[in-house]
Amino acid sequence: MTVFVRSAKVSTILLLIIAVLLVLLFSFSRTLGLTTSASAQDDKSAAQKTPPSDPPSADKKDEPATALSRFMRQKLQASNLILEGLCTEDLKMVSEGSASLKKMSTQENWRVSNDMMYRRYSTEFVNAVEELQKEAEDNNMDGTSMAWVNVTMKCLKCHEWVRNAVLADGSR
Image (cartoon, rainbow, N blue to C red; front, side, top):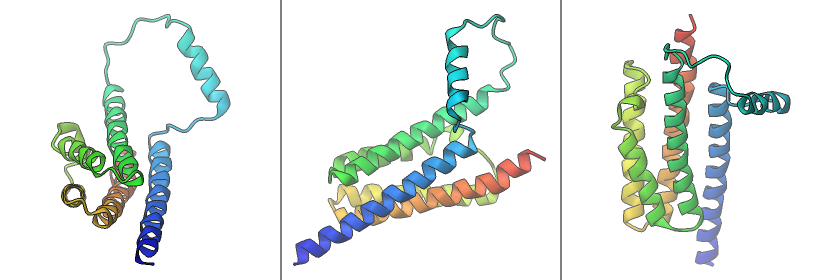
């Protein structure tokens, strides 16, 4: 009976994690304008097939957004590695994904703002990732699952703050 209850708890936690990640992915893609309609995608693919008539501009003002988008995708890939590890009970995979997130947090393009609140959210996220990595290395599946929920919530809170404060402030 204990195994069934534990299995049900882990399954419930994993379903919650998947739901939170889907919400995160949807909000992230909306924030960066990555969601497009089918006709817009057709136009985009048609534009990619035709060579550009003008040489690329020396003005690189669009590059940071593109670099940030690529960096956020890398964070999402590390998160997917963690989720896959949880779903398959491969805690080594979880540890690798959390190590990747931790390493990324030291890179310059991690900081999208120097604001005190952003730094606080970032520090809380890194601490949560460190806890996740510790639980995975200790082979504690339940602890790892709960730590992942914490990491995901820290991520969501920071994204919410960036959307509402940093991006809103930049559009003024």
